[in-house]
Length: 267
Image (cartoon, rainbow, N blue to C red; front, top):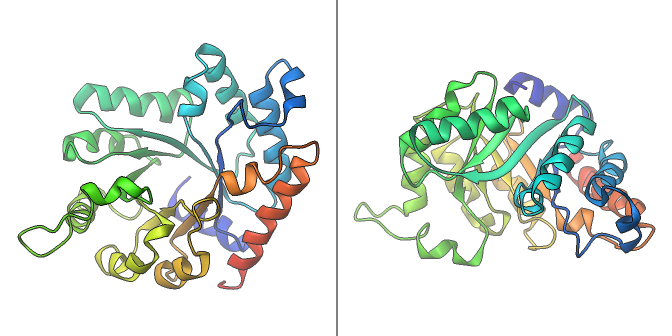
């Protein structure tokens, strides 16, 4: 999916919601364990409950690969079930160089046909550029994350006076452009969005941390939205684990609709 198609979906639905598909066997409703493929059954029901309100899905690959071969089968079935108009993100956080990165790109862009993949940039340009060689696909670079440990490196002050994450944003943005590169910026960094927009005014931002991590949706939008919206706000646990009883689908739908309705106020 190219930039124009993604923007068209966002304005058609009046939503820039991304739903994270992080199926934890220990957290999904227990009655689903009776199914042959509990992970896919859970995802299928979440997709049915939320597809009206979101424009993207983001499977977190760790929750599938930890299950071995059957997890990859569940992932493939999930990908095939997601409506084709949805923007599909592999939350894989890969980061390596040369042929290894290229094989990661082939895995997620060709074998599994994702639209985008999350990538760690700290090994430099040759760890990101192989992903950019495949046309009509996106690299989503870890920019400023929402985890508590992010301050260990990302917030370090350089001799220039800039924070390390600022330098990463500026340099990485030159390796691609706003038609094939996005950046992860955690919602808990709400006060940094205006600064980040000065560094990368046209790029899409994938924003996790709304919901379970208590990022402020409205502050994020106010600081990060642009003419083309330029935001994909992700919610995972806040939607998919809103309930773990037999009514979990209804609760997931309610939470997704709530976020979508708040987003529509800015469009």
